[in-house]
Length: 339
Ligand SMILES: [Zn+2]
Ligand SMILES: [Zn+2]
Image 1 (spheres, rainbow, N blue to C red):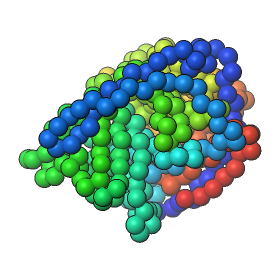
Image 2 (cartoon, rainbow, N blue to C red):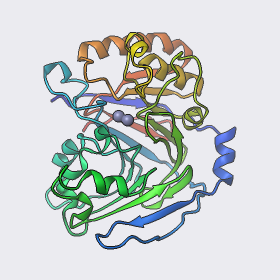
Image 3 (cartoon, rainbow, N blue to C red):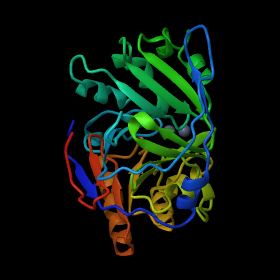
Image 4 (tube, helix red, strand yellow):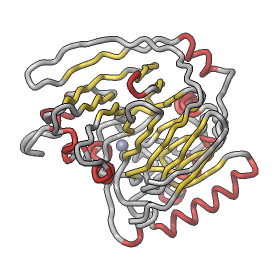
């Protein structure tokens, strides 16, 4: 496994427009549900507000980049074979984006005795986005905590990780795992020092995209997104999530040839991912949720072609590499680091 790629990006905060207005006005309603074995209870409602952090630095680390199912082998050494798991850190507790098999690589990096306390923005329940959770024993420890936000609440996880499909529910780990049904709107993850805009995007089943903000930095995460079969328009909510973002992490599963045969399978082409980010005025798009059939050499070619096409238009295009990190700073002091 290579852990080579470090990337940096400049930042630009959209100081005008819909997103700023919405940030000032919108109240997010989040119903908390605590998944203790025997009871479910509502806990609180968050009110969104605009945070003002100074000199914020945000790291985005890719532990799982693959879509649909994990793959292994020398053809996937650079871009990775584990499914969706990305970690954002903005000075507080980490934010996990999805719970795919990339969680295992994250767990291996933990130091002995290190307690995991994190918020999770779960896009949806398809296997490739949750399969890492039942094996993430770092939460089977007193004092560990995961706060999972999902569009569907706790029931699907309870059903998915239960006999005869799986012997043990991770919701009964010794650490505290709570699951909140997130609705469209804004929520504040105070412990993680970020604010989030959650909106539903087209997919085969209900799926959310998220926009994560810390200070003047904005990151859009849309891992699974059904593009229109004609690839001829952009979903309004996807554009809102990506508007002026410093970084857009977007579904890039298919080539256009593959998409012609699979345009109802819930995904986008890599060309569509770049086009959407450009339309939204984003600065950098990371192609994500690589098709299991896509080899390293395929992805290098895709990346090279789209990067050359969009560089003159002011959009940086790269493909997500498992083990890669992007460090964003609101002081325009882009820096790089390594896992
Ligand atoms: Zn997926
Ligand atoms: Zn999906």
